[in-house]
Image (cartoon, rainbow, N blue to C red; front, side, top):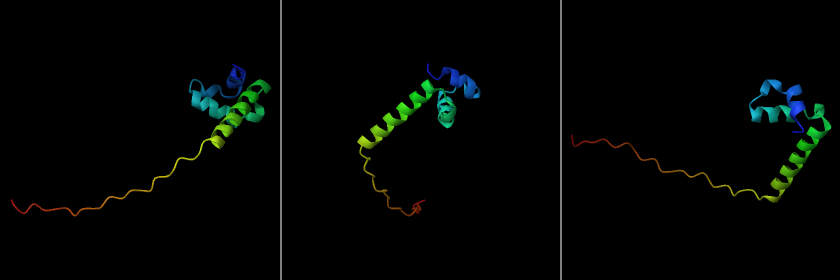
Length: 76
């Protein structure tokens, strides 16, 4: 709700695609109204905290499988 006026003003061409609207608003943070900017600053701070708390998933080594030669059927 805080960003509705900013969406119409800055990102009207992106409506109704929500992901494109969010990307547009993030790209225009300096031009956002104070209430909308507060929403994005809070969201980015919360995301940073979540990423800092969550350990990285262990990387699985790339598994290779043996290559078998193509067999010819000589019985025919």
